[in-house]
Structures are given as structure tokens and as C-alpha cells.
Length: 232
Image (cartoon, rainbow, N blue to C red):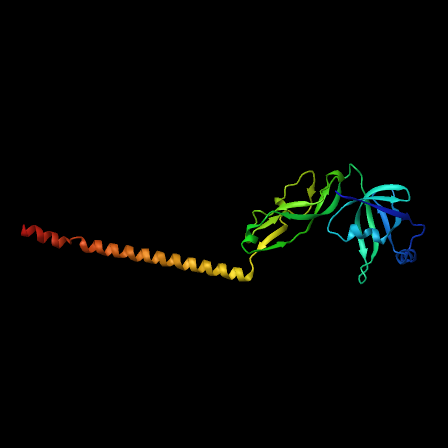
């Protein structure tokens, strides 16, 4: 798991007015929890660029005026219009204590359904994982090499190692859908194949019926047999 370094500054005062002042100065009000006590601090907004505006996840080495903490970004609140970060919550990590994180899903391999014209739908781009910090994966790789038309890969099919997935086993991660145009072509092929099979069955039935009629015509009747005996 990648680790980023962040420098924070202790907050002398709390409250809405102080928070607004910090934002005007380009700082984000933050809190660190998970340890013996909460710690209030601020971080330059520019340092969140590699943490928030990326699909990847990471651990954070946080330094608050000389005090060092390992943590993760647990939550961030954004302004509804400007999307400026209003507040951030960090969770302190401990070596023997499991932590929950949303880990990105990475699809690997080539889907035969996609090769044949299907559309790959990536339904779940992150999954919730519980693990010790040392065992937390950076990605969860999902193999789609056997994913064909109308097939899906579910959470329960993922092989895990040293971590637990908290999402439901039946939740779909990826599925291959058939586009409308291709679906129509496949339906036409199926109808043509069905019609051909029915025609073949009818033809075989007609040939069988002709064979039975010929056999009946060739077989002598009981009266013919009696007449033959009298003549002899």
C-alpha cells in the first residue's frame, strides 16, 4: 500500500468562524480520531490533491508539529457548489487493529463476451475490505477471462488472502451485456437455426412415412396368400 506524507498544524481555536478563517487561508480543518483522544488540526488544501482526487487509496504518515501518526482519510466533506473541501476526518491506525477501507477493483484478463461484441459493465468499482494495515491490498484484482454473454462475476467468487470482504456475496462486480443490434442478430440466427431444425425433422418424418407405405404395398395380403395356395 502506498504511503503519503502530510504536515498538519494544531488548531488553537475551534468553531465555525475559526473554520471559515482557515479555509480563506487555504487550509482544511481536520480531526484525527481512533486513538486515546481526538486531535484537531489543519492541513494545506493542496496536499489533498493526491489523496482525494484519485481512485487509488493510500496510508498517510501525518505529522502534527512533530507528533507522528499513521492514519487513513476516513471522510471528507465538500461544498455543494464550489466542491472545496470543508472538513476532513482521519482515522489513526494501529499495527494489530483491523481497519475497514474501500479498495478499488481492477479487472484483469480478456472477456470472451467482449471479444464477441458484448459490452463490459463494471458495476462495482470499489469493495469494502477489512484487514490489518499490513495486509490491506492496494487493489482487488478480478479475473474476467471466463466472462461471457449475460454472465456476471460476484463478490463471493473473489479469492481473498489475509483480508475479509464486507460486501454481500451476491453483489455483482462486472457483467457482459449484449448490445441491442447484436442481440437482434443473435435472435435472428437462433430463429433461422430453429426453422432449419424443424424443416429437417419434417423432411425426415416424410421420408419415414413413405418408407412405411412402400413396405405395406409390398407385403402380400392374407387373401392373396389363400388364392396362391388354391392355384398350387
